[in-house]
Amino acid sequence: MVPVHPRPEEPNPEGQPSRGKAKGSDDHPEPNLWSLAGAGLELAAGVGAFTALGWWLDRRFGTAPWLMVIGGGLGLVGGLYNLWKQSKRYL
Image (cartoon, rainbow, N blue to C red; front, side):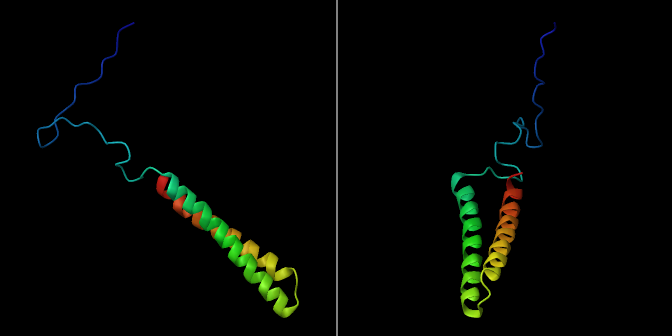
């Protein structure tokens, strides 16, 4: 077998060799622990807030448990949409 050697680096317009893109320097930043934890907390907060609002409305109008279920579903859909939108930055 013939050994494969990397190509020599070609100089960029400034005359310095190009080293390629540094890790995380492209259009997609690297996720960190705090941004991922924040996205999960936003999902949980959305579900909790809409479920609590539905529970309160159920007690006020006597429609238990329907508004709580609808509120939880809306919170889940909204939270998952927000999670998906935030995760697109890292893909």
